Length: 89
Image (cartoon, rainbow, N blue to C red; front, side, top):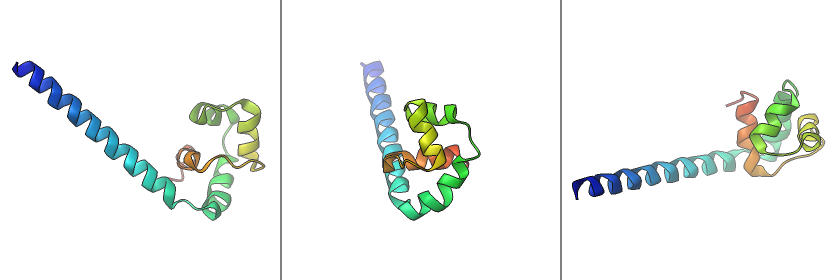
C-alpha cells in the first residue's frame, strides 16, 4: 500500500512539474513580439543551417529554409524554440 501511495505522489509531482514548465514556456512565448521576431530572431537564424530548424519545429526542409531566410514567419508557438536555437535566450 505504501508503494502505491509513493508512486501516486511521484506521478502527481511529475505532472505538477510538467504543468509548471508548460506554463512558463507559454508565458515566455507570449512576451515575444513580432518586432522581436523580425529584429532579433530572424538575424540569429541566418547563422544556422536548415536541419536544426527542421528538427526543432518538425517542419519540412523547404519551409525551414524559408523561415531561416525570413520569407515565412512560423506560428508564434515556435518563436521561443527558434530564439533558443539561435542562442538568443
